[in-house]
Image 1 (cartoon, rainbow, N blue to C red):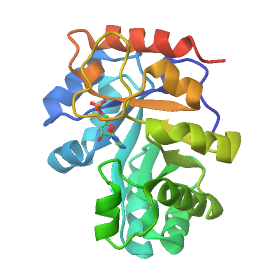
Image 2: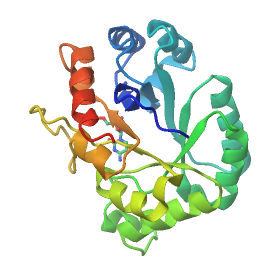
Image 3: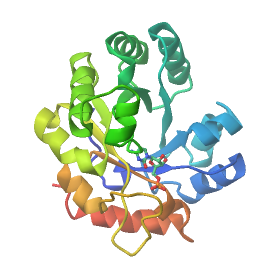
Length: 240
Ligand code: C5P
């Protein structure tokens, strides 16, 4: 997937809001200001698939949709879920790489060429201890590299990476992969909220991020479009 040229088109806004009204208001206020909206488990489970065409309409088709439901099940079930997501017209969606080769391949075939299928490796909420308690003896860094390598070998070209991992993954896999990076905070003094390891937008782009997932610094700003514009400026400084 070719990365967009404009900084604003590389911003994905996480719509982590409890209901349809809040999500549609944000989509309207961010019309033309960002590249995609991320719909996660909370919003999707509350509002259902109908939220997707409504978001598109509210933004007057100016933004794409990233459906972040992190599918993980038997290959046949995941393939069916991916087909359902593709039929909704989403532009990006996520699967857990820990589902293994057969699940990854089934998802990839179901996604087709027009939807960017992103692999999620180890959630950032994991630590060495929580990996260990689920039977994974490898350390975190190696487990991330192992799962991304598995995804790549099975034909995936996109991955979600924490700011901590993005540089190493870009070095290891070059420009052949698309990296989507959450945990980003702008320079102008927002709190880290509950993010532990944050990077600034320019730093994340310089480290090799293609897209940045940003939630609260934009969604909780009194002028979300202005916040996105400032973030775009920070990114533009390091886009070559
Ligand atoms: O509000 P904030 O910018 O922290 O939102 C970041 C978004 O990215 C949230 O939807 C969060 O679930 C998601 N995310 C993350 N860290 C990861 C993976 C996803 O923050 N490692």
